[in-house]
Length: 406
Figure 1 (cartoon, rainbow, N blue to C red):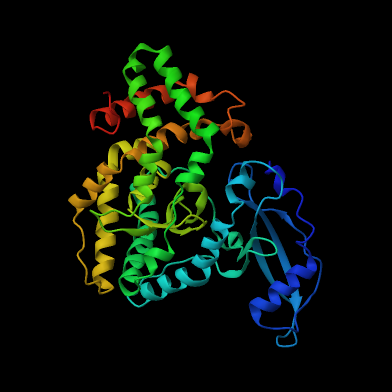
Figure 2: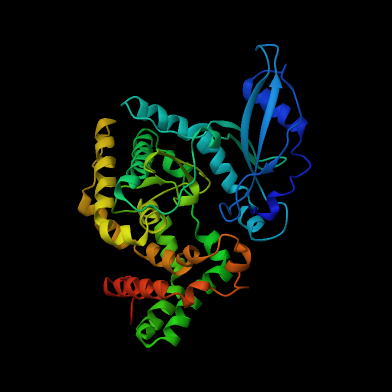
């Protein structure tokens, strides 16, 4: 099994003394003493996580307030210490601050609101979080409780638990914002500058599409629209991360993709439950951010092609139903309003296709940093399936006006 290299050696400060202090604070129990050494191991397989450095451990301890030895499985997310793209992404601590606030304040309130109407919103138990002297988030590790990571979703039935979760997350946030005028301000966050700082990754994505336009005659009509879209990309992203004036804004998860969730799967291989992870880039804005992730980064292309509108319908039905049940007194948008909003924000989808679609064609042991910085050739460029997909989707985006040819 391959692991991210920066997860093979833990920082020196992540030691037994640190974990003893964490457990004492989390349990409000100064009598806690460790019953053995904490052995750290990599937190994720290679390619499963990119936004931070992760480790796992099992902490065994004793306390004067409990009988016998106790243990807890922990997973921790730390800021990168080695120079590179991860460190650049997280160096201002903003994302760690967002995630700590989400786990300590916002998710518990969402769960409370939903519990009042008989719904359960699940998330890993928050153990500890800090920005100084080191940025870290520690959660209970639930991987030994039947929760597993899955791949791209192939059926509507397997999408339903995911749709229910994101609908609950969005609806609860709308109710919270209706009761707290500061909620939208406190949760304003834009990924525009972060995305644009990955100039090499963005250039690679668009240059690969322009390579297709220069190499294959059928792609030639896309060349100028793609160049114009790339020139205007900052405007596209700014518009997406600026709260909508024409549609109900929500708190978006912001990174709603297959690596950021775990599933319960029954003996027949069906998804029976889903739990979302990685709340680092939550942002108050149009739900188009998450819904294009739902379509572009959750479903197989085959499921998206056959059931795009049904997936959106299922989301909308759950979202609207939850708002009514939670007693929301504001105007609930219609499904047509949602479809119009998605068309207005379709530049997000073009961005996904240009920059992230190739990731589906990478080997599991691919060096992600080398790929996104353009140090290795994109294997998708010679893949007939990829070329067929991109021709179909670029044509659709051109015909609906997302790509402009003038």
